[in-house]
Image 1 (cartoon, helix red, strand yellow):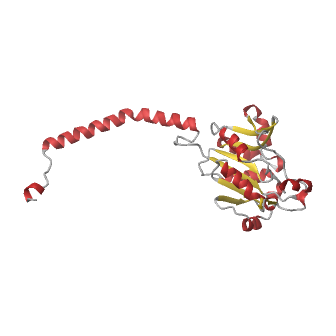
Image 2: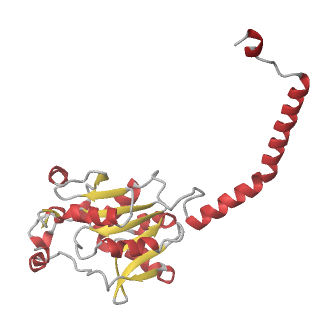
Image 3: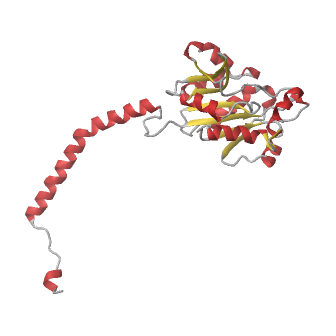
Length: 250
């Protein structure tokens, strides 16, 4: 190829002028449509409840697994055997299969042993040193652990309810509408677990969750805002609290 044909031609003044006009036009078009774009993003973010971000809202799974099993002779509930593995693993699996994430687990009684024996990979595990005070302290610790995660709601489940599977949890999760959402599973019309708390509600729950009351104070005060999702057709909301209950784990 000749040197003449391979030489690089520099743009002339007219081409520079056309390029500048094109760039100016593109800037003007961008500025003209920017307000519409922002309104669309805000509208989408408000619909999804994800703070203006596209995609589905982040619904964290928060598992309370700190109980010491006082009525079970001091056997930590997280370590009760279920299908050959610690019970806490089943509770984590249910949250994961229901589409919750990130997954946060609050441990208390025998926390070191639970960490050693149970597979909690993929979870953020937090210890509650005040677990003996009751569920309220674990709920406060768990909600605090979600700070900075971007979660728009926390779906709270209990470790000792193996009769509640991913189908029921997913029903509650899908009832989320906004960070002000307040949703609970119902069994024959009676409120049960799991319970979904929109992030706007967390400060009040932390302020009122004491002893074994958990979030009951908040739920009672905001009963008119609560959405119940019937799950009695697909789940059983029994607890493992006493020795006779252990037969349900067989």
